[in-house]
Length: 372
Image (tube, rainbow, N blue to C red; front, top):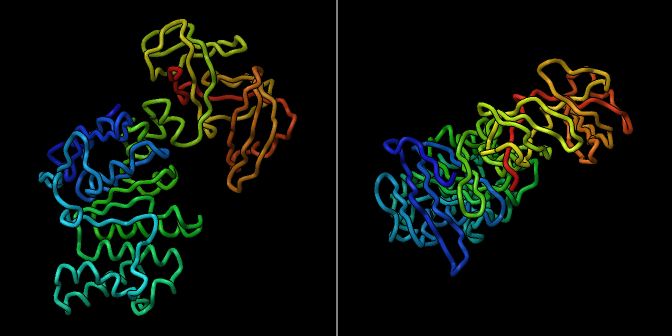
């Protein structure tokens, strides 16, 4: 899928047929997307997938080879970046080192010739918004990385832009600070109602922050949806592998009937029917995706029940993760799979390296994809 949209009548920001090429290299390949007013939309994908290039086209830092960008039904193409009235926060804080925190926040207001009284009131409000009251007199070099990024966010929001673009703004911070600022971004978004277009390669960050996520791959949008939709119903194998952890079991399609397939594992074991996410035909080779948290380890003599399928495995490794235990298990065809069992499960800590077990799952929780 290369495009996705909300109801066009509700579109606040509309991208249509965006394409960006550099000679024979294609950075953006026919991207179309509608974003609603007040939405937190994240562009998620690996390096080189086109997510930042698309953001830069919206910002005006790059011109598209083809396509259009409409903000509130007005074209942004040909409008200089500083005339688009769009806020921008980068990975690096880009604060003016010779200006105080208050003067950094005030800078875009001074450029717009905002009266001093209004300016002071707005700066105070922005400091309160990012929880930096009392820091206005400090210099950027006196602040932590997280505090500097809060100042950058306050400066970007000071002039009430209708749209805020954020390009990997938390990637330079350590995990604890990232977690803290993710919570702050959620709060700021809820308090201001600003429309946010956010770029990240971190799937956990995208799931935590976003109203919707556009998953980019090779310059195209593979799928757009909420975090739950992308995790539970990935439309393509790429999305299934990129969002959350996944196991892909090689299978042979033995039969197809009514949108479900009967499958055979490499050891010849026949599996019950699985939902199709590809145009599979009898005789095709494919991949069956099962999430680690949808698998469980049972006694090897356990039949598993009518609603489960399973395969005999051997435990190769285990890791205690606090709220769960993660097992690495080996199949009869020597493929290593990941299993995550919550500690609330009675048998979560039962298994040891070298143990033989029965790996079980519900066919309805597995999804079938064509081989790449």
